[in-house]
Amino acid sequence: MGTALGAVAIVIALIAVALSLVVPGPSGSAGSQGPPSSGYLWAVVSSGGALTRGSGALSASLIAKGEYQVTFDQDVSSCAYVATVGTIYQSGSEPYAGIAVSTSPGESAAVVAAVTDFTGAAINASFHLTVICGGAPWAVVSSGGSLVRGPETVLAHENTTGVYTVVFNQNVEDCGILATLGSTGSTPVAAGEITAAPEANTPDGVQIATYTPAGVAVSESFHVVAVCTGPTWAVIGSTGVAVRGNLASSSEISGGVYQVVFDQNIENCAFVATTGETGTGAYPASLVTEAGKAGNVDAVFLTTYTPGGGSASEAFTLAVFC
Image (cartoon, rainbow, N blue to C red; front, side, top):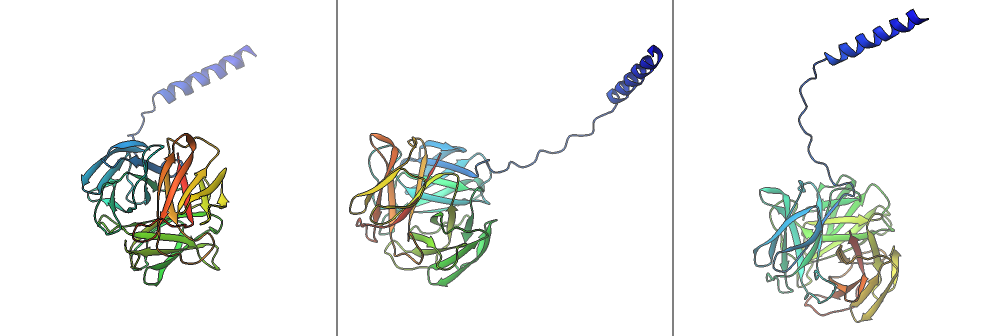
């Protein structure tokens, strides 16, 4: 018995020596960095171009009047971007203003956001920006209705001037729809107004309508995302009644001014909103801006406008990215 155990020990020792003599091969090159686990990057930027908070955001700057660059910690050129003009703190308000997005020329890790007033003139205003690389169905669509990118998008087309259908590979009729005017590449597009709604008789589809700042239908490229799970979100009717989402409460405080309350502290998050039908069908030209609510870290104030900058009661989708 002792002899057998000794033999086994010798064999184990010889195997260990052999393994120690194996020369490791050369190391492979490092793979490219993938999207964040949540699929979302975000930034909240002041009117002066300062990065006030974010996730995956490295810096921000004001590069021209009404034009901002936000740099992230990874390549975002193959992602979608949605943004809304809004205050950076739990107080104050921003004026009626539209926003458009594009990839920064020569900088694949950066997004350019351009802000204009209802006349189309560039203005400085703080805003909230989210980059979607995964985690939700999204699409980037050209002004002619061609799908440029979007891994979970089946098709896109322009129905009439400025009215588009985007079809995903899953049911999105019970989701919230966010959309922003934006370039399919690095060539900027003019800011204006954009609305979003589920597509009638197509549970996998959404309808997007694009407008000039004056509310005239125009063919324009855009970025769209369907928020179904993940971030906190809400779809609110024009009277302030919640239609769907994971919120605590909502109400219309006065004509076109709304309060949406969630069940968690969101003061250090980003808020993105889009006006649009709560049911199906195209929605008229309108726009929304937002602000955190002073004295309530669980709430967001939103103001909805018609073309020309007058506040009016409008339905919208709001998503909170933390």
